[in-house]
Length: 162
Length: 140
Image (cartoon, rainbow over all chains, first blue to last red; front, side, top):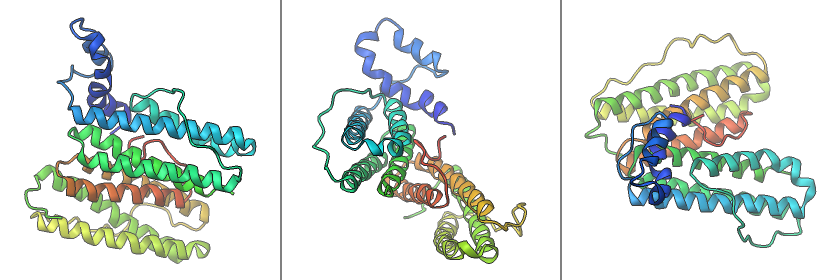
């Protein structure tokens, strides 16, 4: 199943619901869903909304940490650039957006900084995996599970930077 | 994991995954036999996929299904180079990840946990065999 299909049929109802306060009663939300090729969705599970919000928050921290790491260690920019693209794709998919996020100080040691970033991705992978197991919507479960696998790949790939 | 109560569609999902594990066992056996530089890596993957295959066979059987048998061959040309081996291995791991994602949608925390573990294993194995990291393995 493609992620586009998954997002249209499952996640969209949850993510877009964040705008429901503005859109409700106007038909705007339903229009958005129809535009994605999906039928208007029933009220999403509150737990799934929370799970996606947590995923987005954690993802914003990862991206901010990548950026801070590159600021401190300019020679890591080329190594981290593809991972930054992937992390951004994940953020967008769970309905997050970049925001100014405080991150802990980046180590002046290059390897230590990369290791810390790797650990951050690993911890988020664990969090998304746990949320996938408990998700109410099968589609949310699938997206979070896949995101967890992607974050696991990032953790390993970043950890391998020399 | 108890397989009791698995619906026919869920058994089909398990069978899809099992068929891919059969293919992976075949593939890594061939790589190990034909690509000397990768024989140790192939052995590790071969062992891991045999474990997954046996577990899935038991689950399908317990659910009242007839576990899908391995094919004699999987239509691939013989693999002779590390590059061909890495491409074939990345491909089968990618397809296993996709099968696991489908299964994750099944109700039940235990079954999801099982499929999720398979998904993450496949994603990391793909990386080991040369695949690039992806935002959403199994969904892209």
